[in-house]
Figure 1 (cartoon, rainbow, N blue to C red):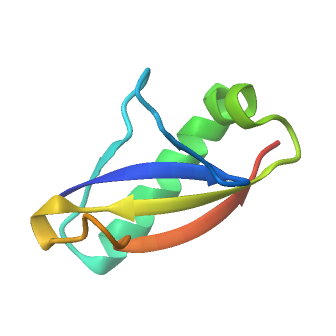
Figure 2: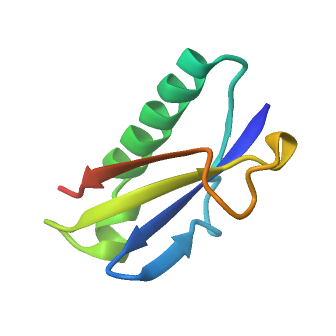
Length: 82
């Protein structure tokens, strides 16, 4: 299945449009791993730092149309931007 990550900081919602925000998974464990891999790639590439700034606490919402999670997120987590 495919899902998309949406980042939110202080009410400023942001879907990463200038780089790929989609993840693929088949199990609940795979979903968690895919979310962590994507967040780590976005941190390491500097994309989150450029948009939200160093030291920001960013909420991450994951939406999956295939499972009907379009209004409410399938999963949520947060990340501290470094």
